[in-house]
Length: 333
Image (tube, rainbow, N blue to C red):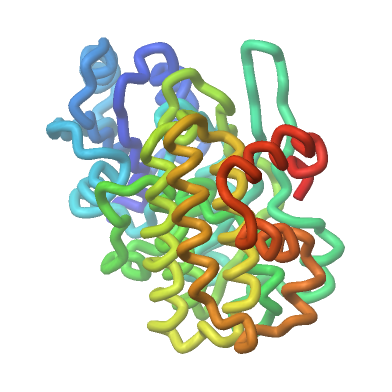
């Protein structure tokens, strides 16, 4: 039986897709298929995929109209035949030993999924840096064996981990009923929560086998546009995952702080009307919360909470002035 399905959503990446595919087909592990979902690309991406498929029968192409990253990944999940699943974004690439290392790990540990670390890179300026999911000493203080699950660790472990769909290898039968929310960005967040909270065994390899390309012009998460507003809908979906598993009370304090930070950084990166809409929705959202139901010690230990207490008392003009006068300080929140 086929062991691994590599799902690669493809949309207008003619300058990068060859690097991605070369890294996959040159793996030291060979028993896999590559499912490339051409999500309505308008550049030469489709032709490049066709050329690769002529020389490697493991590569399969599914062409759809443009529906976004979530829909493409979901399409790949429906088509996948492998016992294990991994995702690779088409402007990124992976180490030639990643599939072998993660496959050996997940089969030896009989885990639901295994994750590795990520290398952030800007190849144009020769920048490479390991994107550690959290300080290793903090992780090692709670995880002493080869596997763990939600019940074994504090909330800090979950919020320190990468919420990406990539840089992981999943058992197919473990994630077969999970899907990415379509029509939204930040779609990895609820998917990752479903995986983490439902897993009985999570294993890991802390080597940075996955290479994430930063600041690609045109990348959806780099654009300061109206899609940033999706973060509010994602917040609801994310919290609902924790409620589904009966874990909301354990995590709600850190969930609140996480979204305060995420939304604040979206405001920093947005411009014009989008920034104002983010500000208005933030005030509307966070003014309706009964903070007496939260652990005040946890909230007040993080300066982002104090920032929002001030934000709720000012209007947008005052916020812009505050942002302009304190931009260096606030970027470190």
